[in-house]
Length: 386
Image (cartoon, rainbow, N blue to C red; front, side, top):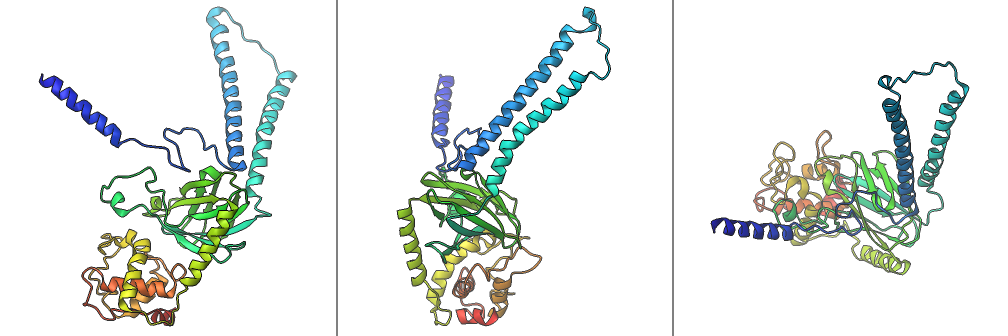
């Protein structure tokens, strides 16, 4: 009886575990138990898959043929069966065969592969150009031409920290969701110009057949033309530091009509949110905005509680060297970073109002409130030290 109760209990636990552990296909990403390459929504992605399988089949035929002949010879022409090895020298037919046949095989494999690689590198006649900059650990997008020219934003990981650190339930988009995706129109050639601000990153979206490194000090480009509306996901594919796993890529491919609407909304939002560094901001305004900027740009290293990571990233809560000291040192640190450490420069990522806001937030958050000098930093203070 006890055994039956134990078995029924174990069965219930297994069923419950199966229900909790159920994993679904990721929209625009990998499928459950996917072994093959992505089918893709671009011609390049489909060409890559075709070349892959063409070469796999050729290699399999060669493997079967070579080893088939070898094992046939070993079994049926062995000495115990009285086989006598042939003796000949400089057989013209064999010399020609083992030269011509491999040459034809290599040419047959190289031609379609070369055609695909050349097409991958042809970024001319693009309908739209977007500059993509890799940061530790997020992506920056700037539209260089077209209706959205001038629109730029940072795309940060949107997975809640309590899912990453607190054990909260995770969905099928875990670590593959962002606050602001790249938006492009369907059936348009999109040129991606890549660089990086700190270390080498890599912009990869498998459904597009795109993977290109982003290297500091260099501009490299790639392109795609998505022929299906939807959201497509990728990740940084170059080991770039502590939070390498936390910089996903999401591209929303939309209709031309929806793209025009999105462009109008973005331009309107940019105009309305234009920051005036000469404006005198209140402490509450700066703290409220700074909290959001801290969550998007600083929390991965310095933690939500301001305690940092011992030995790697210093604590901001109670920091007397910068946060509770006169404002100049902290402003210069956020603007220019600290060479030789993991602290990067934010002068190109955040504007003067955003830098003033996040500094003011750190000076009034956690246990810092009412303790240090210069509790409020105005944008004009940042302007003076740029």
